[in-house]
Amino acid sequence: MNTRRKLIAGNWKMHGSHSANAELLAGIVAARPFACDVAVCPPFPYLSETAVTLAGSELRWGAQDCSMHKQGAYTGEVSAGMLAEFGCRYVIVGHSERRALHAESDQVVAEKAQAALGAGVTPIVCVGETLAQREAGETAAVVKRQLSVVIHTLAHCASEMVVAYEPVWAIGTGLSATPQQAQEVHQLLRAQLLAATPHAARMKILYGGSVKADNSGPLFAQPDIDGALVGGASLKAADFVAICRAAG
Ligand code: 13P
Image (cartoon, rainbow, N blue to C red; front, top):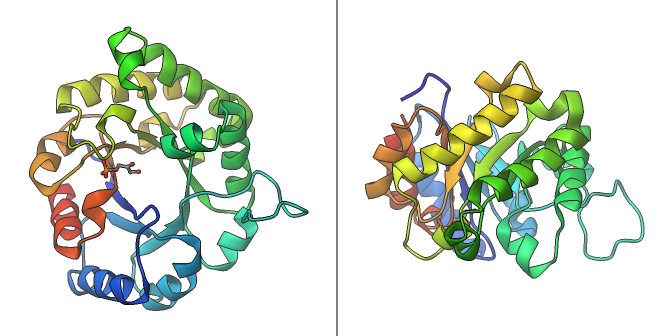
């Protein structure tokens, strides 16, 4: 276990409703306080009610994506500045589902991260290899390439992002990376950050991919794993709270 304060962020993806969200947030609020930072990332329409529910608590909220543009004729997009107005502390950028389903390039992801920082919102930048890439021995090259574009674009601000390693083959499959597999990649990413910024030692690198209460402890015990980006298990308060407890 390292000394960086852990962050557990729930990525609700396209799940939720007024009633389901109220129950989920109430369950998380009731379990406070936590010994780690805790954030939820609901779909855009629910940010406002999430902000109202969590206002005044130390719990944080974020969004799942933002535009790389500040404003303009970009139908359907949401700017980082708008997220900041709703009190978003974080925004996930470069999730593999967006890279795959919306053809987001490394450069677009980097510019979204830059837009987020420009608005005062911390980007959680996702990187990760597919199963085919892992099997071809390309994991290190893929994640390094994805991160290097972001580091280059953010330049001296790179130390202000959170990085999330999410192996695509572990997302929603129940197949989590082993703590050793994850640590190996986190160590690589930390080394890459160290080469780019003197502040890398305090930066958070989260793991994501089928994180559950029962597999999170050994992941969090790794020296370069600073928390988790949780999908499915963030939708039930008891499961999410158990992961937060494992991080404390
Ligand atoms: P699961 O936890 O459902 O595997 O999803 C991980 C993820 O994609 C978080 O961003």
